[in-house]
Image 1 (cartoon, rainbow, N blue to C red):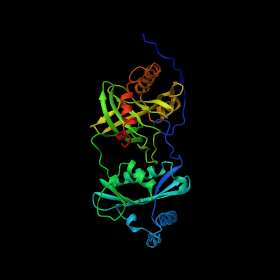
Image 2 (cartoon, rainbow, N blue to C red):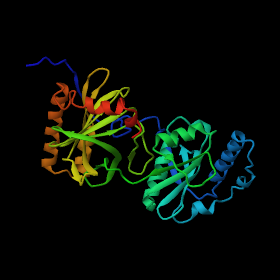
Image 3 (cartoon, rainbow, N blue to C red):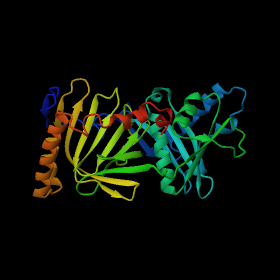
Image 4 (tube, rainbow, N blue to C red):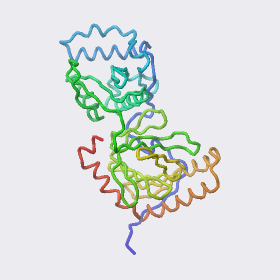
Length: 356
């Protein structure tokens, strides 16, 4: 029998959870992205600030035509949308979307106040605009930015926007294809009553004897229902097992949770582009710094048995799965040892992977 390092095991009741893996990136927990009319007081003030900032960055240009900020009818029309971003009750940013043609949308007037920058707020707003564009049926998005807006340009390039020449006289005209790629997999976490919990789109990396491996980077958006998107602390891979009532997420440093396993009903694939996971609350985690293995959310499990009416066989099966996972994760039995490492290396070592 091989020697296995001792890993302490701990059982917990209800844990404070901010994301599907317990730790979301630095998007403020108070962030709200709210649909607005472009003539609202918050919208007008934010647009005035945006025009003033553009005038400072491009003093040789005339922005007088943009100083009238009563309304932008094109962004209040059907097939368009205008959003104001709030941190708590404070408006901190804005952005809009309009249609160019049946298949193409355009992002307009994206602006963040200084205090909101560098906190993933802009990336959250961009995801909201993209998801709304998909709801409208657009298959691509276009936008414009200038040479003196490096923060915006860096955000758009990292989010998959690429140069396009459509005759617009701007320094950077960018476009993104919104259609799912052949390797894209939507992951839906749902509660037992079918309500949507967490959802994301990951990249299918491949399959082995353990199951299907999916991957995401620190730019991969996770959403809890319709709330503002969250972003992980580092690259991560998800294992959807061939057989087993769970899914596992393995995280690269500096994420303090190395492994997070959700006890669930057996994952269900719809084609190759959608996997649905019915979350049964219990979670087994391994901490990176101490190696401690913990069972989380037993209080939630007890509460939801009543709220959602878990049948007796579901309750018993979830407890058996949790006990099995505790044992397997504690001794690092595969696939909870090093099986994930080559898949994770594809994301952490490859520049192409980091742009997923």
